[in-house]
Image (cartoon, rainbow, N blue to C red; front, side, top):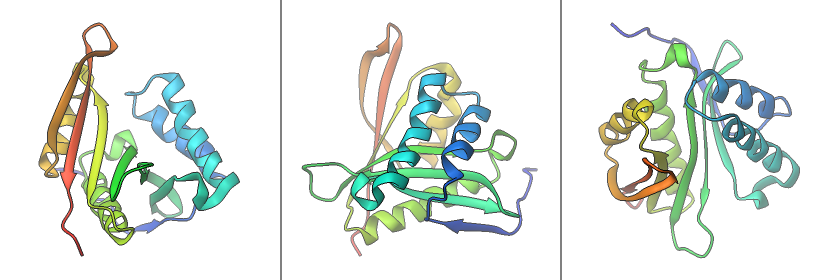
Length: 167
């Protein structure tokens, strides 16, 4: 039976401590390359420096004041109602508890509130990402396309898509 996490609250304000928290959180997932975790931190720093004009939105899941998961998303420039989900990460020891699903659902609501109609997600085809692929399919995302050997030979880019219901 999966571990249950009680008293999860969600916030969308980026705090000055969040870039480092995001770095440690993404590092703890043991999925991402060091340069990827550095970029995750940089996006939060960009949001702190530029505010909404950065184009990066965040949603954090916390319990007892500790960040246990987050998403980073934003509108795709030069499109109408299209958004990228840049990051979703949940602390490794809490994966499979429903936190990621709830974060994604709330992120989709935020995207809809921002007049978003489609969400795109890009990820690697490496074997280590199989649980990630199952997660997106379970959350009603479909595989839109696969770009062969995108990241490296044998490491494809998988692009998922979900059409959101207009509100």
